[in-house]
Image (cartoon, rainbow, N blue to C red; front, side, top):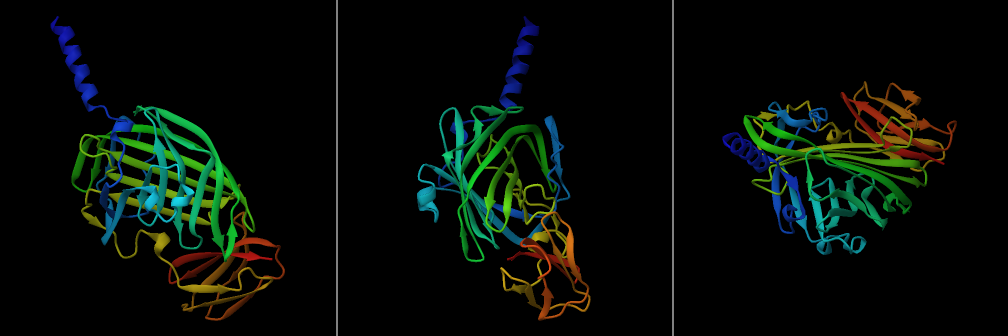
Length: 348
């Protein structure tokens, strides 16, 4: 009898520590969380999984005086309300991505997202033909959900509106439960929700492109139904290419890191050289304006990552002749003062 009681008590203790995502603990409209913006080059610890995971971000650095918010808002109050009339919640990560969704007692569905990208403006994905199933309830450790979705993408490139149809796949899982350490603080009984989705479309000038998001969300559901830590990466690249056209990461923590990112580290996607290229699209001649050091260099790279043109000396007003290369989309990469920056161009 005592042995049975011991087993029962241990089982109850285990169940009390286990956490699962359900419709009842979804984030609700009006909730918000202020997060510390952290080193965007930090590893995502993708290989740390299992039921006794220990996610160690004790050395993670923060950006001084840099905060971001997570907001749960009514989609009807957002700029893109007309694109998501069937959504009941918008999960906004400031200056990065907003995911529009609705739910039932058995699953959570996404009607699309809005990705904020300086070179393209807002990239709006509407899964109007077939919603994306993000997860099925209850969703606990080792559970996995996969789904196909379809709809349209909307954005503007060099003033040219784009509105191609799109299709995609999504895989969601809770790949670990355990402890999360940020700085000197350790939070026990945390679960990690991972979502990876790929959206493909055929776009004028770009060809076949793929938008990929890999996002890790850490939850301490005993104390909050908002994530306490997020590591997210978004890429846009041509299908089959290994060179992203866009590659952005964001790392947010509700726990303040003790380390500070040095002036020469992290957030590389936000370290840019201030330069302009024109005309774009171009029929051959390309002019580069900006302030460059004597060792500034420029490369023109095709969609496969192959270098087409390289110029080792660059100055304000430099001109490059592209009339000999094939029509299509290219990346202009400028290295100046140790910082690499890129812009996309179209050769007609």
